[in-house]
Image (cartoon, rainbow, N blue to C red; front, side, top):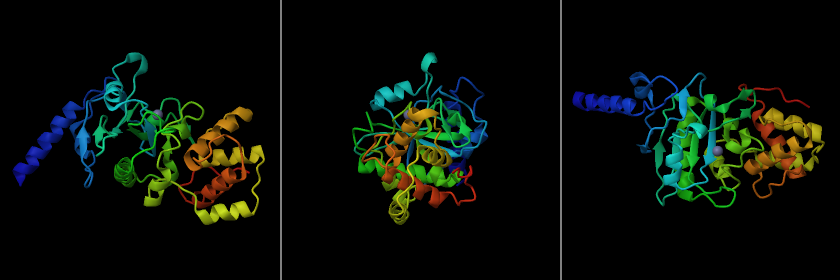
Length: 288
Ligand SMILES: [Zn+2]
């Protein structure tokens, strides 16, 4: 038994050395490597280490989902972060094979360069506050995600959510946190399915129906405040509101993503605020 433990820690030590590829910070210590998660029943493969990371200065409070817009080989190449002009990295890659795999490129104890310019609620620069998952898909607004990808995403995400005690509304897409700049993981991403299994936020149908029955207030200022209260960074003016509405719809009303404030969109938003605003972890006060 002791020999097994010793070989396990030898393996972890080797892993720590293997993953010491972050050029911009100190090597993750062996203690950190040992603290890396053990996923129940989910095999995590060690991929090529990425230079697109730095030491983490803030606790993990957000999980950001992406699509790669490229094939597995090209994505793994780019995500090694070797291009000094476009240094990127991510913690996990979910492949698009018939039996998808999870590949780890950056330790969770490090911050990876996957979100770029981004904001969510009171947080800015999400790299330092988040874990990133890239899913191989050329365009999640055009091509669906397979059931097998959704299943493995649920296994991976639920484990991350549990370990970091993430709140449902902080499981987001890149398009949610980089409004107007990004459109991934796209309207085909299985948000509803993941939420039905317990990962991420979703409005309750009864709340949506009640809001619709009340004929929700569609005034731009009110909707702007509601989007902000939920977490979206809404730029000033009509274009900013339109882009944030579009980002919201891409996540919660994928059947029609047009940036137009309509009754259904507002009912969904109100239902989400009703469901999650009461949580003691909820950050900003709901502005009128
Ligand atoms: Zn992205």
